[in-house]
Length: 158
Image (cartoon, rainbow, N blue to C red; front, top):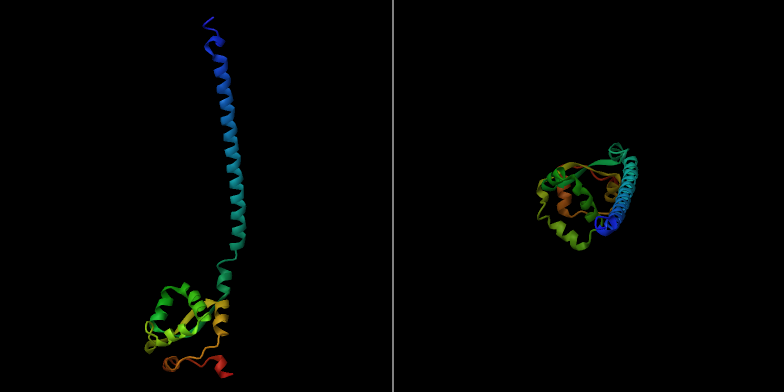
């Protein structure tokens, strides 16, 4: 009869809808499992980061070194405002070349006439890099150090 389920195609449609529903549930379960795996990985990563960062900032303070440096006033002000620049400045000094030394000797941007003693905070590693470098200051630098009243370096006293 025309009103029977097979005549209307009801059984086929019901089966297709049921199969689509199962596929949707399967995709949803896969997405949920993927989200849960991602969240588990994120929790593990956060726990690892937390354990590595737990000693900070105390351990960072312990690895700092403070020293007095004779610097042009503009450079001292710049480092006071942007202390993170000490690392690239140390690297530039450590890896300097003759052309860079000639440019620095001119002291055009940071004039030496207003050199001042400045407390510089750096890491122990950066300080060690600076301390172990051989540096023969130009006459202008020697005059700036004398005018500022800075003490002779330990290596000069030896």
